View 1: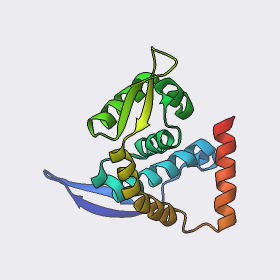
View 2 (view 1 turned 45 degrees about the horizontal axis):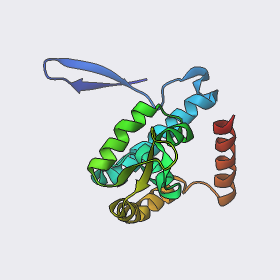
View 3 (view 1 turned 60 degrees about the horizontal axis):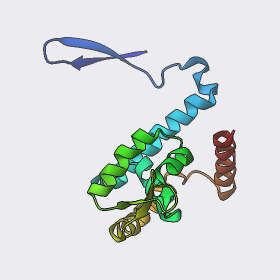
View 4 (view 1 turned 180 degrees about the horizontal axis):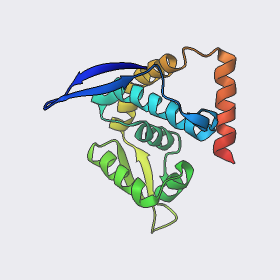
Length: 160
């Protein structure tokens, strides 16, 4: 293994540099590989859309609200698998940015219906080219069939 001297603020340290660390059996675990892939995808998404102040999760919520205008906050929380209180904080931030509007639910007085505002619609339209470019960039090593297969397998995992 190569040893490289690394200068620290107070003293001289020795750091070992190798091509790759041994991950043992982790490389064979689907959860481990999914997490590594998610981290890489989220980092790329953040680089592409960081100045727009939106995370991958927030983007997904806006798209779900757009395609399910009037969905209840509880229904949306169930659909995306998050706690209602956690979702509430995100919806609060969306409201402050005038991206989403809460309205009293027509049939359930205790619930709120969520709607994308005109500004929210414009915001989504403005970032879609960036999102599609990100998607193309991170899947550039896949054939169309490999991408389709991966999506099918991931959906199977998510739906179990």
